[in-house]
Image (cartoon, rainbow, N blue to C red):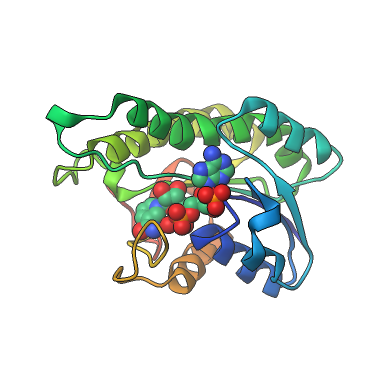
Length: 225
Ligand SMILES: NC(=O)c1ccc[n+]([C@@H]2O[C@H](COP(=O)([O-])OP(=O)(O)OC[C@H]3O[C@@H](n4cnc5c(N)ncnc54)[C@H](OP(=O)(O)O)[C@@H]3O)[C@@H](O)[C@H]2O)c1
């Protein structure tokens, strides 16, 4: 069975990816900041290997990749992310903004760079980013400047990398997972983690180089940049 690596696996969308791929018999490498407190993750049955990563920390990312140097990864899902909610522009939290850019843009790039040899070794050769339609400039309704700009930046970085990795036959995909019932999305969100993840899994499974660098809703609809 193929191997999937998932960041931000302790809860929310990342945990649901772990549950669904493990239930389907995949080998799952579930990376989270603090395995000791990730009790829901520890309870997932199947072939789940839990290890530590903090995507803000290059040494942590490189250590995780070095520990898995012999592993071939078919699918890497850059899921870890944060949402630093700003008050108003007049009140903007610049430290929080930089933190949001660091986690949501540089984090996935650190992970992609460190694990690229493992992806090249895998047969699947797929690199997925959980972005957000809040990063879409053409679909902008305002507000959330800090988080929106982090996901716009992620989309551009991921798009550049998709072009760079195309000669290696690596398919890169960006997703809006929907407004999902998680700690980030809130209990009143309209989409369950189950439906979001099963939708994205279908799109990922059917994607080929023809979809490289594209931005999808969780149900497979193309999204505007
Ligand atoms: N929920 C939504 O409605 C929604 C909508 C659009 C996009 N998204 C995106 O979907 C992804 C998952 O969101 P979610 O709703 O599942 O959020 P969540 O419930 O808040 O979970 C976020 C996950 O990311 C991890 N994480 C945060 N910073 C990290 C770091 N520096 N290093 C490693 N892991 C880190 C968290 O780990 P800890 O447990 O250690 O904090 C947690 O596992 C994010 O990229 C988010 O922006 C979500």
